[in-house]
Image (cartoon, rainbow, N blue to C red):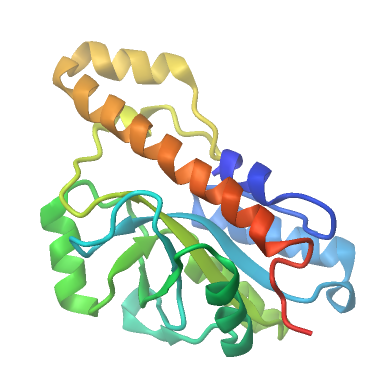
Length: 216
């Protein structure tokens, strides 16, 4: 998402964002072509994730020593970098993360994915980062903050105005709410969780420093 990329961006760190896998992959490759692979230490998937475990609440930092991609392929983040992230981020827990190519809308979908994969958290971008890093022979890592709890419901309005850069157009959201007014309460709840998660992202970003805890 654009807000997450904005938090990550800083001295020594260039960020790209998109909620759509093919656009994210294209932007990552374009950036690497522009900068040159020799000028890049590694790629980190930094942002939010959905909880697949009842004990993970919004704001919890997670670092993935193991990532399960589409079709249950296992992707392995850089171990030294992952350990450095766990040490640097406040309260971070190592956990297996699984990729989803579509948003998981409710607890039933999340529980089904947990049962299939054994993972405790899910996102839609980390497998793209892993694929690009592997193709470029670069180390990668995954550091994510829980946004939505296990039994939350993501309403249609939350996705209605999603743009290519991860920002949100307000008019489609309002149109969706007019069609489905009952979505207002879960949308407000999601906004509150987002505030908690983004505060954790900002605190964690400061803790990681200019090199995002990349080991020497």
